[in-house]
Length: 313
Image (cartoon, rainbow, N blue to C red; front, top):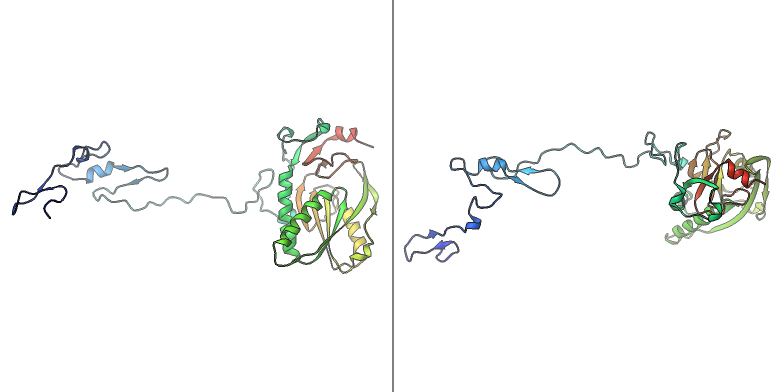
């Protein structure tokens, strides 16, 4: 070692260097957490008890007698849920998801307390609970727009909106479709027309369906038609509408429905694109009405028999 090096004391030319005593604070055994070595076994025995405390997680110990880190221990892999669990609004994960059914709401889904949301005061006492908040509805519609655009292959679309209950669904869906078109390298032409279907009175279905409004349906010939509707129940109304439109020989017909209701009298009709599958409940809001009431609700809510009697015509 060279003379004058730190920790060395030089005794002059030719003298052997002498080690300086270690400072008291750094002397072996002086640290409160580091024991002094035993005279016969060195650091090995003390290393067995020396634990290196780390951040929360598996602890590591020094290997006895070696002073180095022990080989990594194997831990059981945590049981993470699958990437796409078959969950639904009722919290059940027993079945794999069927994306053709949309978001499936089970019969025992309790919904949301009305006090968690704002809604018009003139409906206080009329609603039972919130089935679908507006935020969930809008997010689901955005995904439907992506599915539709991907399925149709960015072709021009003639959108046929079924009034009155479908106008908010149609408005939000068209807006998302336009956003996708604006951010793609292909322009998609979208034209919107409106029709009304008279098929029920109060909460009872009528024997015949009437198509009201809309331009001459002969203009649908050769077009890619997307029918946008608020709710599909038994499916009889939609089948009658499709039969009327097919007479004009459009190039393609697709149906998008915000809601599909599980009803005992269903004939099995399923729309091509479904937002939510719901139990057999009477729902209002988000433009769905009952004798022209409740269309101004932002959320989809459930009403009971007392409310239907109150607003019956």
